[in-house]
Image (cartoon, rainbow, N blue to C red; front, side, top):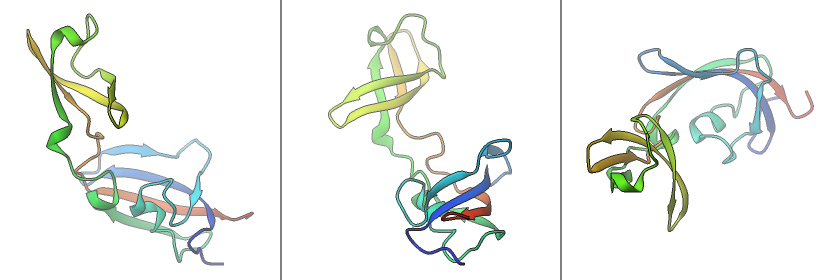
Length: 140
């Protein structure tokens, strides 16, 4: 049975950057379950499984537009340090309220009176390389 759009799929995976740096994998965990071709996972992986079958393995390069998007300069936010929690350090992830809802932003620069927060996903703008193994489809 080959996977079609809308099928429930279970995979084991390894996600890495182009330089081989691994950022996530399912080793030692339950397989990742999602709907093939659905929007509950990045499109580059969600669509890559279509046409595969249980036992199939594949390596897929996922460009930013099919992953976490391009980096967006408008998501670099400058704030006065008085708006930050006490003792916050560079690298801290902070929740921000925006007109569009909650945004997670990483503190990337901290000066005496000004700080820069980055609301981009840490994988935005990067081509990702996924090794995928299909371990289940539907009730399999």
